[in-house]
Image 1 (cartoon, rainbow, N blue to C red):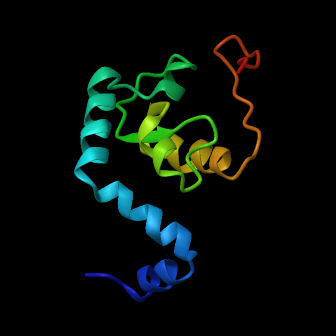
Image 2 (cartoon, rainbow, N blue to C red; image 1 turned 120 degrees about the vertical axis):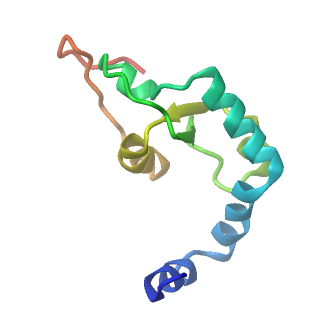
Length: 110
């Protein structure tokens, strides 16, 4: 059952964001998501650090889609675990530079 917090969160989104969020419930997105997770079932960002973690999310890479329907379905996509998607994915979506480090301690080139 939705909570008051959920209702407030939904209400705080712009009309544009509310509209594109509907794309996540389409059959087309669900198929694309399943294909991506089947192709790469491990978190690609964890693998950069030689951590093996199952992927449960699919992230819109390269700056995301920003509500553009064509970009929404075109990709590119990244398989991620929930913690990576919630942290690094959000930072990328907000245009922040994310510096990651490999197992050798050096920054990973992007």
